[in-house]
Length: 245
Ligand SMILES: C[S@@+](CC[C@H](N)C(=O)[O-])C[C@H]1O[C@@H](n2cnc3c(N)ncnc32)[C@H](O)[C@@H]1O
Image 1: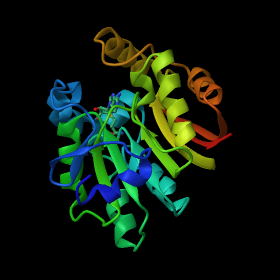
Image 2: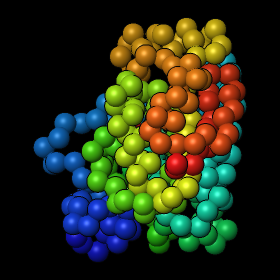
Image 3: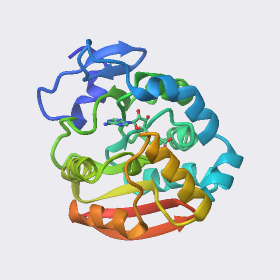
Image 4: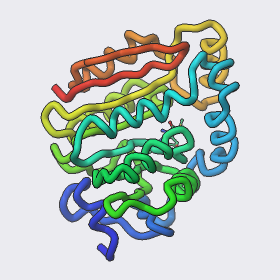
């Protein structure tokens, strides 16, 4: 791989190939792969998820808590950190920028399938910390290195996937974590009438999988090999800290 790849390769199995596709962004997807759904949704996504009103009114959640949760993950260990499905970092860039400014040299890898979202993430990070990399890859197939990562942050992803896909992705993330490494995960779940109705609409529009209950979301994490340490629900948003069993 070319210069700059050293930011990415420690997270991947030996010999995994990625190619540069833009300013500090690499890709594992074939050049012929079609655009990703979030490429065209990026601007709307940012407007909604960055909105205090949308998060409070629809999901009963405080949008500032997303950066707080990311800060907690970043402050919990010193080694490699993976943001799995980082999106545009609309809610969490601040946590990464502050962590880098505080002198942390944690190697961070930001993974998302959408180049449009990654470009926005890259812009939000400003000066890229020397040990950070952005990678376009599919979490269903990404060849993560075994027991190489200390923390995984996976926010707003689980509810997108059906049971089988979610289980596969969680198992992959689990195997990438060092023993007792931590997964910090958020997911939309059932639990509040207005949000539940919205989840139903999103599912019918094909935007998300079948909405889960809190127990359903925790069960799939346990089955994938995680011990649940903390599970907190605010409105329709579930915040989980779990350790690799
Ligand atoms: C709801 S957004 C969450 C983004 C970010 N974590 C956040 O909290 O704002 C979901 C993200 O998952 C990405 N995504 C969906 N399926 C994916 C997959 N199979 N592999 C990698 N990324 C995926 C989308 O491109 C999108 O950026």
